[in-house]
Amino acid sequence: MSTTISRLCVFCGSASGARPAYREAARGLGRAMAERKISLVYGGGSRGLMGDVADGVLEAGGEVVGVITRQLVDKEVAHGHIKDLRVVETMHERKKMMADMADGFVALPGGYGTLDEFFEMMAWAQLGLHTSPVGMLNTEGFYDRLVGFLEHARGEGFLRLDFRTGLRIAEEPRRLLDAMMGIAESR
Image 1 (spheres, one colour):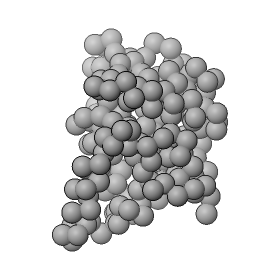
Image 2 (cartoon, helix red, strand yellow):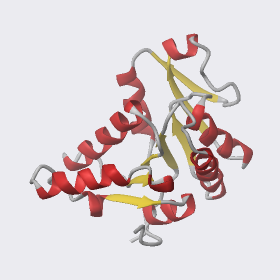
Image 3 (cartoon, rainbow, N blue to C red):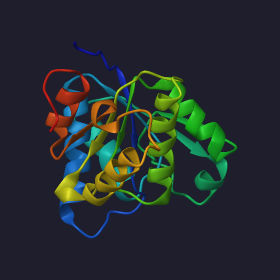
């Protein structure tokens, strides 16, 4: 069954990471989204993978919606080239607004914030609060150990939602989008 995604919320690091492949994948995802007329909803930043995915969308003529807290705008990390930048007061407002605008969610490599946002969407799916597709761009095996942990948690009886069927995982941006839209299998 095919899923329509018009706005994809991307969670990712405000750092670039240790490997150039992370930046390439972020830009590649942004370009692939724009080619498919999928708008980006993200944290509004200009640094790291956040800036790269937004730049990829913009370079390919796509639409970007940034949601950022006033505190981060004041620290001058807001992306200066997006037309739709929404400023909120708290991180909770930021996450809710991004979730409300999106038809699907993707985690790229990142740290605490990325994992927080990703796991919140997985928890909401397990609770039946959304049925949107969730994906993980596993660039150069970045998430392999996390997937192993999720398999362990499932085996130990702590995950009701089988992440293997509720989560699409791919190493390449176009394959991930295909999997999330039901066009192809992800693994």
